[in-house]
Image (tube, rainbow, N blue to C red; front, top):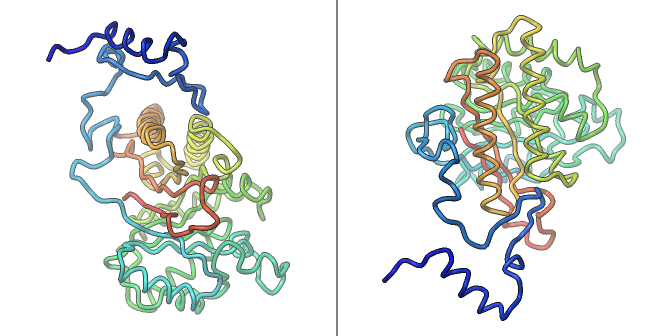
Length: 334
């Protein structure tokens, strides 16, 4: 067969459209990008990093050389520690590979469940106020093998204290723990509109946790930058990346001001992105996020290793279904 030229395709397309404009086939995305109905090799000849390999800077196709599967860490929608633990073991026996313990609104804002409005207790997560309750939530979990994600909100420090005390009580060194604690003061402000402490105090706490983390629990990501508040508010993929990466820059600057080097901060930051139903746009978003973050960290003087982005991705709330919740899956990439 003779390979068709672009002009041959256009002629045939116009004939099929029966005189209508070929521009009718162009689609405008939410990001303002015009998607053409067909692309040719010439369209990508000037695009950089097309020959980029996984595990090589700027990490466009992933942070690791070896192919590693995404961890599956479904959020379990239960408000009590007992319900959460039962559901967790049920899911771990059926394919889930990481623990995703999201705390309720009261706990995430650092409030005692006995002193807040009843509506905040158990809202959008597990109500947890003591070390015994944390122990009940993760009872029977082998942390030698299974990563732990704790959606702590503004309560990272007390929840971290619970966690590390619990691990030591069971003879398990925090240095072996993998996962994240999800400290994100700007994300809390964006999502809830309030923060129980001044933002500079939050940065001081973040710096103290990071200093301890370097030796005490190097496998944990202390900071998780959440793009969900912006995505849920209607942000495009470009806007979502802009807010998330700007937050990352702010955290690097604030930690630098407190004497912590970029090579000690950047590897302990995780990004949490929403994933919509526009498949190729979401792939492009994650690749762009890795590329831009690598450039950001490099501009701060970070090493190649520090330029690697760790991504947690979950189905966007804006396209979750009310009537068929079983299609909503959360993933963590480590």
